[in-house]
Length: 450
Image 1 (cartoon, rainbow, N blue to C red):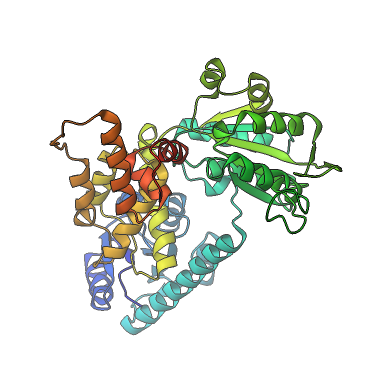
Image 2 (cartoon, rainbow, N blue to C red):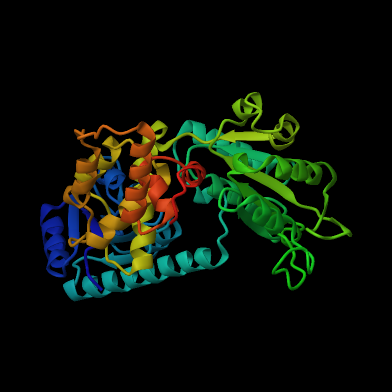
């Protein structure tokens, strides 16, 4: 295991800081030192230290235990080791009671320190991998999994917590990549339907006929190829939640069918004669302004009001830039573990690059950018050079525009994006700065195959 987890040593004695720092650096760790508790807290605010060695007795009004408690407010996952020359049973018990992981006595043995750090970091890595694996297997997300310190997002989380156990329909609006499905999952798994199914349907990815069969199921012989009975997503979601993503793209016929399900909680399978009753909560999402779509006669007004019982409008990432460092750190921890890469943080210079970007693809784009940087990173910490390509992409460009119709330019841009992304519509739409449903519409309009 590479030893580049950041470690903090806090001691008012320069000799202690220098010697312990030297021991740990010899083992390959990145080490910062602080002469007092206040300085240590300021350092912890900008660096996610894996381990903090803190002297128990320090002048200046803040002792080691107080320093530990303050650091845990900023970095709750940091492992704290209290060190002191004045060992007593009472101080040991107090340190452990307040959250210290270990308690060691001066003079410190370099070999003992090395073994202790190695053991703690191995445990941390296992705990992180287990937590990610559990979440990956269950795909269950609750409110505390949504990372934010933005006041508007915190209001949204408070609202979703209040309505989690209601059956009322929720409409989530927001640009592509803002985390609409994550919020929908938080509503479901925080309420009384958490043990029941959470079923996702992308309304823009299927034609009207296929989407109808997908939602309501079909009977044997209902159409060519229907060799047997098949349950639809509404039946599979019985007792739980169905998440209808990109709801603004469904056809007028399906709008009518969906309205009936919302009103009566009943429907027929395609080709069926037996009415099926379900208890399903509906959460819908769209990047369109449905009120405007109603005015343009593109969306049924009665369905809009049925869907819009509780509306949640997610802000774009450029409107909550204070969340970029938090999200970036979260993605580094998760993605590095999933990929088996030893990357443990982001430097302030790299964060400055991320904060200056406008993020047209929102949180999804940030996640993809972090993943690319982790794959190419060579130093154990993401630095400014790991995002140099992002700065180039953000720079103003001059275009040699041929003398062709605007539609042809758009068609060429779509074809080029699909070629770069090897036919992946999701990635191509992010590169073009449009949502998937809009790209699907344009693929049909220009008769582009992918």
